[in-house]
Length: 333
Image (tube, rainbow, N blue to C red; front, top):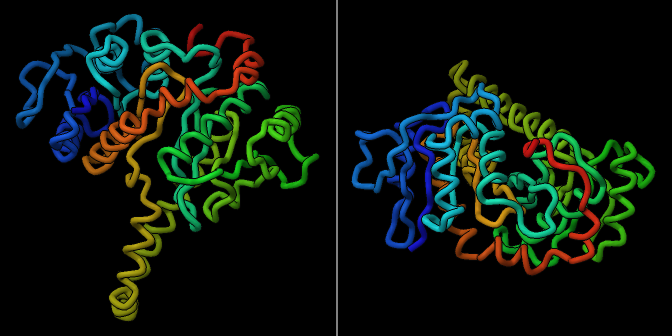
């Protein structure tokens, strides 16, 4: 049985959608354990009492320190203490990062954990890392992200010998800022299947199996994609319902439109791994519905089954580990 600690008070639609998602994900192999207030209706799931929550607008590090008994912190501590195999939260991302660094801690030699998120590319899903854990990064950190993303692509997406590209402002080797230029050189010597730079316009086409970026660039690209997909699907829905001809056309393309919506829906995977830690952490979108939460719990369980943390500790090259020792991450300050 895989036990997944779930922050019942994290997210825009907590706790109702969180509980409903947990119930949907529960099975003979997976037990979601809810962390929330006494009296919460859990529909038979186990509840660990947590009297307070960390809000989205709170300062991450200060909130984690000031609220050690919050649902988010207690759920993270469950993994650190061995009471759960993984943790899922749709709450404050910065607080999840801070709590994970404080309690679960990084794998030996890993300097910056990275958020690995699945991109629903046309040629098949790919992984973008870092998608927002580190606004600032060094070239050595991007090299570590590439190794982490490669493991993710292999173990979770089932990709053999994943192709890696670096997100930049042009595909030519000489394009980019100082960070990407130096990271390009490191990736070229890494032993990974590095294929050079890629531009953000190719992300939905399937730029590579693994796309590497610093957290600022990756998060901007991710949110631009999410907003574009949402606007496009809503516009299409509006056009198809605006006239009789549109409604008739909608009936004809419904199967294709449904398939497209399902492929592009960010709730399909439900969350993103925070890789580089001693335990498995899944960060879900703040607006997650019960469907997204259920899929995030399943994603966490799949990571436990595939022993992602253990494999990462075994496979991260020692040279990469040694080269990434530098300044203290922002979240730990």
